Image 1 (cartoon, rainbow, N blue to C red):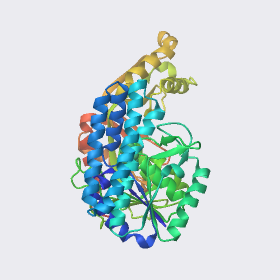
Image 2 (cartoon, rainbow, N blue to C red):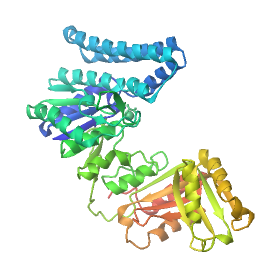
Image 3 (spheres, rainbow, N blue to C red):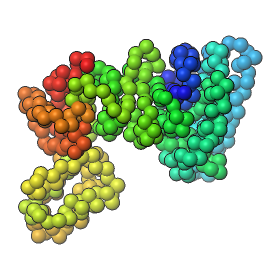
Image 4 (cartoon, protein in one colour):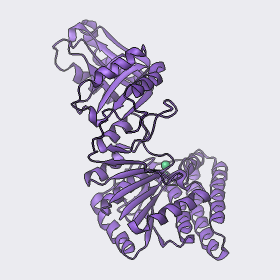
Length: 467
Ligand code: ASP
Ligand code: MG
């Protein structure tokens, strides 16, 4: 069997849903189970409704809900012409909407919005879209069966970022879905949401539908997990920056994780973990261009002679430097630096220390640089007075350019090529780091140089030429 996950844009309206039905039809022989996101923008809209209600703006919340309801009803009318089929679908939508209204009134009355109540509201997006999708599939003679995700996605009670309890999920998913699949039916279930063991609705965190799909694929031992979205796959670089960028046909799990970490629009590493653990290939495909082969993500990629596969960048960063001659040979400075920063819950994206040990630098989001500096000044108060540390400062407006590819491992000369390209482009490299996995070479450059750096490296490695 396979799992097919359709994202928000893939179900954004009737035309898209018809397209999805076509695609599912083309996969019937592979015995699919379908996981679906909310229609695009709906989770955001539901969140806004909840916030309006909790701030006491009940009318505004209900007005926004009205708009959402309209959108679903219009889509259902466009999908299904036969009034006798339309009626039950309308009723189901209305029933859900009434429940949301009750919740919003409750929030307005209480004037509070807990993660638990937010989950209760947000989870309606997928429930509504899945109702519509089942109808769209059935209208095309596909034997779709609606399966409530709360029956199989059993999670802990960390509302808004719940974790699946895999063993329970496994039993339930198999009980619920295997018989359907055996009978030639197509289970259609919601991504993103689940329930605690005692039945309270949870969500897995924003964008969590991919995670749901990977979990389901792992539980049902899928041959493949297809992630249907609105792009052709993972690209060698952002095509807005590099016009000759193109889709990468195959990536390893590790490469995909590096790219995601450095801001490329790929699957979140946590998302694909269940698939990695069971060695299930994933494929990213475009709902609006289903003939393309997309990007396959597998454990081991076949060697196509490419070293660097993709280049990506994150901007809006600051480089924090802790410097001092007195740091030489003093143990524990690094520990102290990162403990202080971690205590402030500041996320560190890259670390570099030259072996002269005279400075440690690391990169954080600019929005948290102030916090990091303050924490460092506090813990190193004494060292600063004694001049063991001379300088703690942050340089704003930097970017990390990440050069990613498993083939870089053990291949000499990659660094030389990267720096050669940057040298030709007169781009100054502020700091460098390479993990010992050698899958990733990260460079800190000034933000205004980032796009040019990506283009220079992309050209140097001839990534515009198909493998
Ligand atoms: N609908 C949810 C969100 O927008 C989950 C998802 O789309 O993956 O975050
Ligand atoms: Mg989404």
